[in-house]
Length: 153
Image (cartoon, rainbow, N blue to C red; front, side):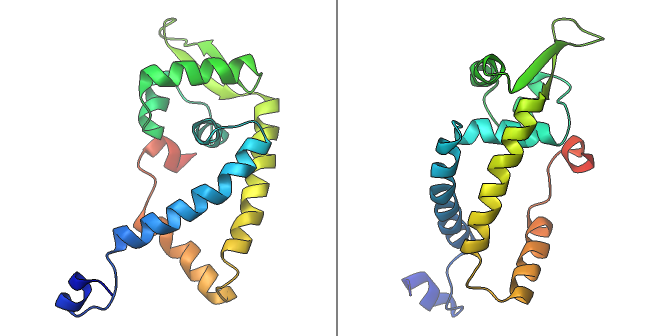
């Protein structure tokens, strides 16, 4: 127990510290699954967002996934070259590109997501079924989707 825990009498760590530790464990467990499928974490984030529906433009996509827009272009170039996403000129502004998954991108995303879900089942194995259901029901309430486009997708 840390000094701060003793001082406030809660006997527990701050939520941020606990969530950070859980996040690190999950990221470490996902990394080999992504690598086996030729993806980086950011590429998987893009595929996951686009699995919810096309992004109206690259800037919106960058904002929604909280990724630097200039770095996103190279990432999208790579995904497009591999046939996983397609960019089409927007109807209203031909300088703006709608971004969507191809069938190959959707299939790859589904395969990786299934592998991640299987890993998560192992990760959650220490919880009984009721605890799992509770955790999975409560987390979205603590961290709701931040954009209407994603929430509605």
